[in-house]
Amino acid sequence: MPVYSSVEEAISQVTGEVFQRNKSSSLSGGSISHSQCITGKDGRVFFCKENDLSFLPFFEAEALALKQIRDTQTIRTPEVIGFGSTEVASFLVLEYIQEGTSSPSGQKEMGHELARLHKIEQPFFGWVRDNCIGSTPQPNPKRENWIEFYRMHRLQHQFELASQKGCSFDKAAVLLLNLESFFLDYRPRPSLLHGDLWGGNASHDRAGHPFIFDPATYYGDREADIAFTHMFGGFSSSFYQAYEKEFPLDPGFKTRKILYNLYHELNHFNLFGGGYASSAQSSINQLVSAL
Image (cartoon, rainbow, N blue to C red; front, side, top):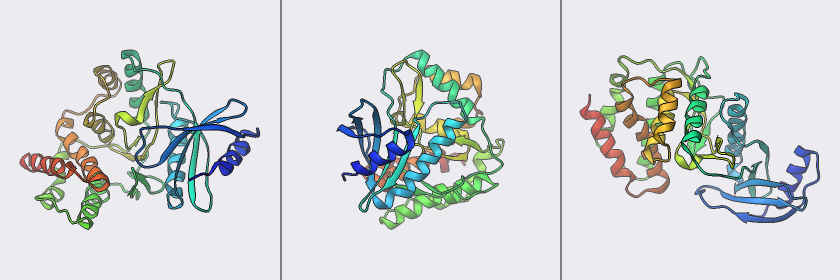
């Protein structure tokens, strides 16, 4: 999906300097959009994601989320350069941050900064607009009740998508009816979340400082972000210790971690199929047995 002329124009307009592409190279790691590093004739380097034209609203939402997180001055995100579309494709251009290596001090810094991000709150759950997680639409209506929000706009939403693929889950209805049981002594606050915080969406720059990217942002229970960091690994004990020191977790997190990662297991099934259905069913069984 060559969109180079539009990308060049977007970079030129935003930076105030004419940008002409010299070369580009594809980057690995993304499964939803085509990602590449674009180098200009003047040596400037940018990161660009491309997708179908219909994906433009999701790029717009991602740009807004990156700016919102960046404006908190808590944890770094790539600067948004611009986004747009051609007749056949959409694109998002970001600051290119050259990756370095993780270290205990960098993990500690990430834990501390993420805790500070989670202290940013609103009086509602949800967000200013819908967005996506992967390529799955993620509804974010503003709601005052977290349990209802999570029941309807996270779990029920994913169950309905799975049903459209011909997959149903045993005891799903029982779980949905009894979500309150996991919040008897815990009152979540609407924290600003990354929303898709696994190891592939967090990194460190060449100086060892952390940054996060590819957000699926909304205001929700901060435990949902922390839960997903456990699902695929990539975060060290230094990260968790620093987070807990800055913003201690409630003791009930151990069980709610399963509840929150169920959302991602369902989403991964809806995106990729495979064994994620059995993982989701196992989580449902554990949660129902804990009622």
